[in-house]
Length: 429
Ligand code: GAL
Image (tube, rainbow, N blue to C red; front, side, top):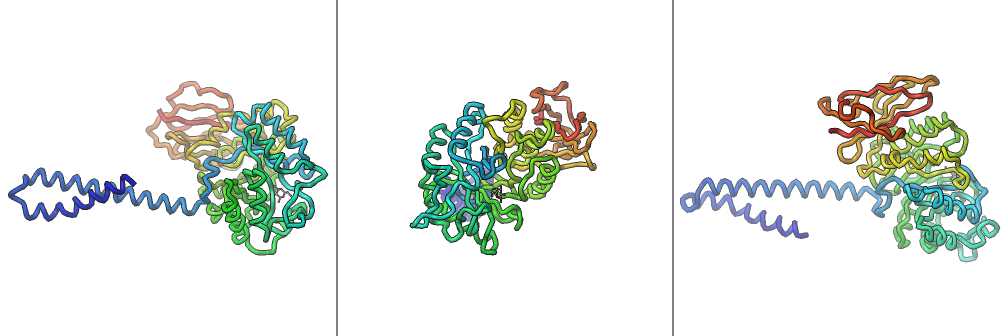
């Protein structure tokens, strides 16, 4: 507000100035006057430009869901990929403990999310959702309290239809009531699925829950799961904090890599507050090799995807944990600039992906889809790095700077194993 008061005064001066110049030629020193006028014009120009930037900024913000959440992609765990419907409160508590004891919490994983199958198959007499008594006898509020007591956040699941995919009650036509229930329970994240609907567009049904959540009085990350059916990347930034861009991931290379390709197509639509979601991680579930698992993690990190672990973290082997806990790769995902990296070059089986990071840096990923090791060359120009700029290169999987730091100025070639990646951060010097 201080600056707008300033702008008012300055504009007034500016308006008076030309008249003064014309009428008082003899009284004022022309050079000084011209300098003053030029200064005032400059100030006005700066202010106009500032306002322009501000109004385009607020236009941008208006298009975004304004709940302040998801400024970087969410990180956490979800029960579905490993447990499916076999969840209960002991498993969720033990998982919460494991997220702390493994150190996952300390590298940024914060949401503990239960998926489908947590509720009774009918609502109570007042129409409220209720925890399934056989598996969650202490109730959801107690579970959320437990998760919060470990300095973690709690997420739940519902559906924009009459029933969820596993046929517990959905939230269609109960949005306000369910949003209030979730807020009262201490829910921090809602995954909202798309089964058993009334046939209307997600564009109609999802905003109703968005509004119900925002009226419920608790910030709740809104994770839309309409499987990319109506190209949500093009419209959902004003509705959700993330939106699935694909169908369900399966625990194998072919599924993971095809989902990465589909998600890549929507790169330009991701931004702080709203992210493309290519589904949860399968790392730790045994369907992919070490190389494939780190490719999965690297691509999801580069694409600014939600990093939602989908394995049994109580029993995850050290090698998989090490992938999930690679802080340098996580930093790429959580970078403040929030620009989704994308495929920038490729000739069939060997590809180069990348994108800008904060402070003028770049993330670079070389992907070998082939069945033999290959040398892959990344031209820096493909990332938008000017040809006269030298860069320092940091290998985020080897955790070391490449030899000859500062001398790379147009490209780098690396040997990449089958179904593997090399991943770097490039810092201009
Ligand atoms: C699917 C969803 C999965 C999981 C499942 C539960 O629609 O894509 O991630 O939530 O429903 O039934």
